[in-house]
Length: 231
Image (cartoon, rainbow, N blue to C red; front, side, top):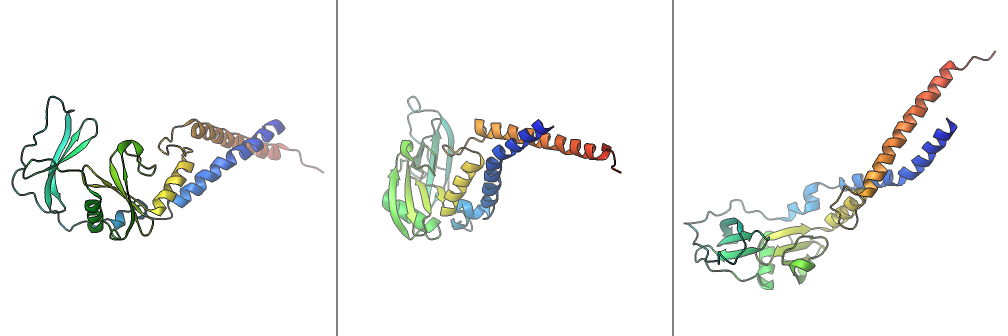
């Protein structure tokens, strides 16, 4: 019994650190509402999206050489009727829905105007940076060509240069939440893979330590009950 008790003590010390990380990171992640973390409260949504008038024009793209199309949708984007075409390789093309002509990539000025009308505080941009799909920042983690707008309060807004759509809003609290999530799943490199050796190993050790402690608890109680009385 003494040997098992020592094992239980050492296991307790070993799993104390991950248990503390799981608990603290979990508590800190739920301190703020998820809408504030994701920046949903900063988005300015119109009361009603304007309807697309008439039928969109056919899109003249090469069928033989272009990758297969997986999605095509037409809608009114900031007062302009557009058609977004998504290919099987993930690339997005934007066309004028009334003429069928391709729309050039979003310029910096167009991106600034779009953010100013779509994000609260979007008129206070302190910096603009352009990123290619293979070099996007870590807090974005999507292979898309984007403009990154830094707002006065430190919020990052990512708007797709090809589609003209706002892809993500990264507040300071989101970046803190993302770091806590990495600690919680023990994956600070990608922060996307809960199934990793560290989590599995410490999880198994925690279960074993809990079972061992339960067995020792009942064994000690049984020993107290069966012990002969002095006198």
